Length: 361
Image (tube, rainbow, N blue to C red):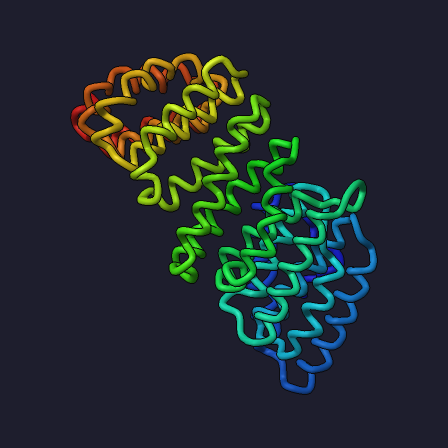
């Protein structure tokens, strides 16, 4: 039998998720083979163990306890209130990998919620608002951003319903000086927008306008970190709901160019990807007014931001394939330049081979 208390905990959240899934597999097989009497006894002992593990915060026992809660929940343990109370003790974490993993666990607990899970997801919304509003040592912005992402993906209707109370939280997250918090916020905004498209269509316009105004304001601050925040959030909004930007494309484009031109590399790299994502909004306008200028800048930013620039080039291969097909030789050169970033070089080559096939050779 796998002892949860001694389960080795890996360093990254992706590996923790794998550990959780393989642990559950053994847990399930063990549970299914038990008689009812043994099962009840085993579950109560297991719960006691998880409860003990929750009492040593900040150590890998936090991860073990989270895995235990998720395992019981998946197995169909019927006292959700008890599980959610235990899990609640484990939030919020501060280590980024612990934050990501516990947010993923929260998502597992509230996925397609029933009544008691809905109550718990509303409770989690209140908690993330609290973490973000707190000042000083009690402030947990990274945990807030990741939890917002998990809630948007797994209990979308709850976050859509709470939009008005989450607005001030978003202001606080986007004004944060840490790029780690800003990136987590941008990815939460993508999931939040998809949830809105699904559950809040009648208020989608108001929702998009809120972010549009927010990002436009941030862009005008002449402060690189604010501009960076604005650009990465604009990019997620454009990717999740391109139609909204059809009317404002020309203004948005010139606004981005104006505010990012002589700024530090961080801003230029983000601007490149955000502008490239505008090709999804109106490919024709993009071809006539944007692409030549953008493509010329590729060399300047490629090695500084390989992941973002390769993503941008992939987006353009999708939305303006005829143009990008004429640039196959340039694209192959970019892949060569990325020789020290093999993952991105391979990603770029895969995109062009899948898109243009024989013409690449």
